[in-house]
Structure formats: C-alpha cells, structure tokens
Image (cartoon, rainbow, N blue to C red; front, side):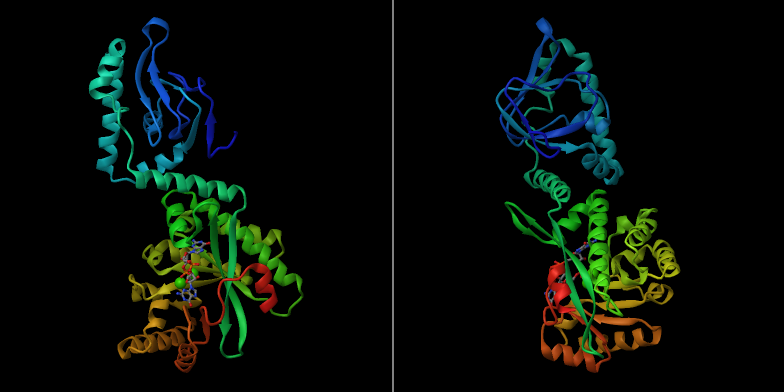
Length: 390
Ligand code: C2E
Ligand code: CA
Ligand code: CA
C-alpha cells in the first residue's frame, strides 16, 4: 500500500540498503526485519527486529548513509517516521542530551567500521539494535503524530464554532473556532492533546493553516448571506505560528483571496505566549495595521504579567473559565470584578469563558462583562448549525 503514514512490505523485499541516503526511520508494527551488512560471503546478520522495534533511526539522527541493509523476513507493516519528527525534537532537546546522543551514534559507527569483518561478533556485544524496543509512550506519540498527519491529509479535522453572546443586545456577536479530531479507532481526541502534540514539531503549522482555511470558508458563508454585520470568528494561534515570519502575511492573503474584511477575523493569543513580549507586540501592531483584532486568551491562568498587559494593545481580554466556575468564592469574585474595571479602563472588550449556569451569566452581566461564551450559550457547533443560530 502506498501511504506516507503506513508501509506494507512483503516478505523478502528490501527496505533499505547499506549506503542508501537516510530518508526515514521505521517502527515495526507487524512482521520481522533482518538487519545485515556486507554482501555474498562477507554478509553478516546483525540482528532480527520484531514488532515495537525502531530501525533506521541512526542514519536519520546524524544524517549519514545507511550502515546496514534491512530486509523483511515476513510480511511487514511499518510506520515510517519522518526525519523532521526526530530532527526537530533533537534540535529542541537539552544540548547536553543531544551531544551525548550524537557522540554515541558516532562511536557506534566507528566501531562498525573497525569491526566490519566481524560485525556479527560485535553485534553480540555492543549492537544497539539488539533489544531496542523503545519506550511505549514515546512510540505511541510518534504513531499518533503520523495519524494526525494522515487526518490532515484526508480533511478529517473538523473546525467547530462556539458562539459568543453579546449580553447588551442579546445577540450572538461572533464565534470561536475550536478544532476537533475524531480518530477512526481512538475516537475523539481532545485539542488539548493533539494541538500540544502538533506543537512539539512544526506539524502545528499545517494544522494551523488548515484551521485558518476552514475559518475563512466559514466566514465567506456568513458574508454570503448578506447580513449588515456578519459575525467575526476568533482563531486560536500557537506560539510556533506567531514565530513564523510569514504567518501574518498568509492570513491576509487567505482573507483577500476570499474577499473577506480582515475585521471579521480575530486572533486569540493565549496568555502564556505573551512572555515573548517583543514578538507579540510586533504581531499586534501588524494586525491592527491590517484592521484585524487580537484577543488575550485564558487571562489569569498563570503568567499574568500586568506589565505586558498594559503595554500590549489587546482589543479583547478573555477571562479564563476557572474564574467563572468560582464566582461564589468572594475572593475570586474580587479578582473578577477588578479585571472588569481594568478592562474598562484599558478600553478592551471583555469575554467571560466557560459560562454554564444562568446565575453566572446574570452575575457577570452585573459585573460589567459584556460578552459571554460557554455551554449555557452554546457548545461548539458545526458551521451549518452556526449559520442556523446566527
Ligand atoms: P480555549 O481556547 O480556551 O478554548 C475554550 C475551551 O473551553 C474549548 O475546549 C471549549 O470547548 C471549552 N469550553 C467552552 N465552553 C465551556 C463550558 O461552558 N464549560 C467547559 N467545561 N468547557 C467549555 P476545547 O475545544 O477542548 O479546546 C481546548 C483548547 O485547545 C482551546 O482552549 C485552545 O487553546 C486549543 N485549541 C482548540 N482548537 C485550536 C486550534 O485550532 N488551534 C490552536 N492553536 N489551538 C486550539
Ligand atoms: Ca481560545
Ligand atoms: Ca480560553
């Protein structure tokens, strides 16, 4: 079967040969693979690997030609692991760990060259291929990452829209785009999990582009109905997207391609990213110059640096749902009230997140929160459902 995510290798076929350039590593899901060096009389079998084993990772780690050949002994199913999946994690790893790993690979290679003729004997002592079944959690992550790439290719991620209510006029003011992945076997995978996974490598960039594309299409459908004031859609943006120099331009290009007013897109930046002050400040400036608004998401969840909040010209502050859940605690209420007064003085819109109960909505309204989002107002909806309620 030809798929970049799953490889079926019939018994007897060669996966790679000694001297080949490194393309990807492989995780054996089913079958057995024999690793050997040399040819003819000097051919030596270094080992036989079974399900759960990783192979071909060394050439990928140090970007060197294959030092051995791999052939399927039985019909095999393999998960290819892209070089990037290792490369980026290696780049991001602790420099000491990286140096240790590269030095070990170098040492193994020089041993292999030196003992080339007696590779089989050496294999018995220092062959890192032997018994290298890798930690299950790490491999599961790699597998999930491949499956996410596949889902992206097959358009299996769904962008849902959660309504945001304008309490002052009792109308849906806009929506937040929230991405869903229903895995064919694992069932629904939470964005908290798969977005975090995607953020570990630059996989978040194609995921982000996909979500952006879907959001633009949804906006186009709202605009096409001919309302005077179509709703905005808020897009969650990750740290890597912000760090990507071309991101801002691509957003504007996508909007322009569908003849959409940039004011219809709002960007949400989670509070922890604000630590990267210069980058966020520059991003907000560029958004404002293009007519796009920017929200500070999950406000109050950890890194609240008021020095940044007053210097960064956010248009909206989104109070984290943790506060809304604790409104009956007088000390929490004091903070929620203070945030309302701060937002009013800064001239920011204020959205309360995670509103689940009528009394919370009333209380927040009385405290000056004009916008609310949460299951009480509506769960994340399909685009068709969102078009029906607004
Ligand atoms: P978030 O941006 O804070 O999104 C709000 C989360 O709260 C969503 O979870 C939403 O479904 C949930 N929620 C909304 N109302 C209520 C409520 O009344 N009660 C409770 N208990 N929860 C409520 P979800 O969809 O699981 O998303 C989790 C996080 O994943 C989001 O948090 C956001 O940070 C991230 N995320 C989701 N989609 C994307 C995306 O397309 N790109 C990026 N970069 N991040 C995304
Ligand atoms: Ca958000
Ligand atoms: Ca939030």
